[in-house]
Image 1: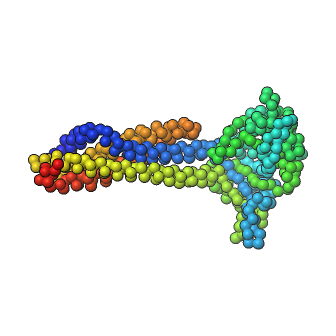
Image 2: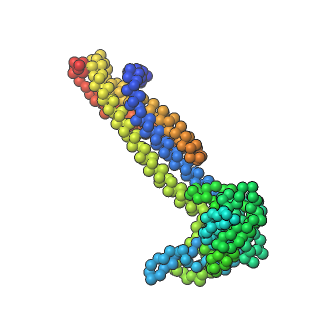
Image 3: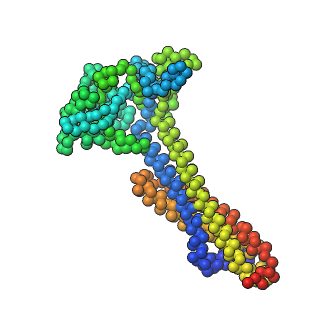
Length: 406
């Protein structure tokens, strides 16, 4: 008997019990759809986070103070004073793989204008900070070198601060807000950036000359962090090595001494977040894959029922010369058809589910083609694996006993 006839017989048998076949495929459909949806949503979220973080500058590098050790106990880095303005000057003079450098100091408080107030954070920075962090001005100007040197009471505000501190139809430029009891004249307004990949509002901020925040608000002489921009994303690693070499010399660290600072790049952050999302995606995919196993068990169960129901038919086929191999292939083809057909419908279902999820969560629509191919392969394997034993049982039936079966 050729495979075309076996396929025709298997198709006829499935059509005879359409509702049962649909219920059998349901496990495979849900399993495949869940795997594709979970992996695609994970890939979409990873791409969304990468795009959000890339908006902050893929060649951005930031330097933070290192941890303090007192009495053998790590005290953290919140109050470490290892970074100074001399470090900034050294980086600007000596570093060849970075284009711009800016110090940063910050503090939280209330921004007040008339009867309006809003809890926010003020960042003391230098003019290149906007280029490094990919911020753009919607209106006004950046502070000048003269204003930085003179500790000028000027600032640039984000859109969230504008919406909550100023009344409607009021132009913020030229207005005065108070922060920490210090009046600041608004000289610029930032373009809206929205939330980043971590869910933080990038518009809820005030920028001021670092000298003003450093001396007038915090009363400190050190800086809290350094932001720099590498020549290109490809040069980020070289820029990091260069920064580490310069800062170790500036801090007079001997060979073997631990760094009293930490250098990180935006590319490292992107890779770290991607690795976390990859792990979560695989975990979700594995959990969803359990339903595929359940679907395979369902196919085996139904094939056993089918063999039992058609025992007499099997006996008649064998009595007229049907081979055991042909009988086995007939039932195996039925199982594979159930599995593959369920897999195809599951792929369509999973793709549609991924699209709806990406639309609802405002993420890019990404279908993991590897997940689709793997799911289809797994469906075929499940059909063969779980259909083989019932098919073998049918092939090993004794023809005389099978014909007598009621």
